Length: 320
Image (cartoon, rainbow, N blue to C red; front, top):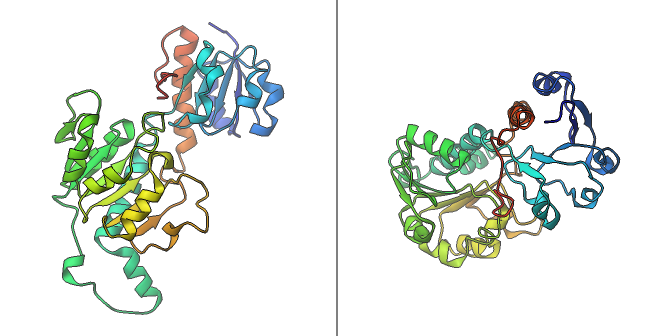
């Protein structure tokens, strides 16, 4: 146990947010810095609080006292590299805090497609009063949502989908009782699950096992009337195969918040596809995001101070 831990946070925080930490560790020495200025304060820090996309590797070798890294994100891909995997340093993340905004974002994308809102907005800009053909306006009621990656975010999306009277299926390694899921599939049954879905929602972490998971075979398994929604990481998708499926109308559309390269290059064909909705990696953004993340860090800190297992400790080898 460290009575007065030195905590380096790679993000500005308010005095109120700092109090989340000092209530747990009154003697904590809390320093905030930008990533570019992290080298100096990291030398003597016991705990590093960073974003999962922060490239800390150039400074990591100087962190001689570092015992624990906490990510303010669910994803931790930039924090896992050979040195952190080999060292005894702990890594935890902020899983569980993203569910509400991301579930609402997913529902927003789905409703935008079924109610043809982008098309109607374009007509509004042109002062056109024109109803889509009757068959183009759909309901999500009774439709099947397939969730690929049933973690905390996936659970919240399933909960919201059931409130909209959808059928929910999901892929999961362990066959557990899930109150908002009608049927679970094992990872090896992915193609079968995809074939049943009207909406495929991806909430996977980016790991060696999920890199490029969605390619030609997976998109071919989906119905041509199905919509693909990705709010996880762009790297789980072979983007060229998704573009081809959309251009050839083998999918009804895609709602994409994440991409292989971000910002999405201006030359990407995705910008001009009429059946694509693009948002700039903001599905998890909420005015209370940092509050939730730091409160969760404080819960982990209380466990760390007491010598208990961290509530959101990740497996450094698996990446989540």
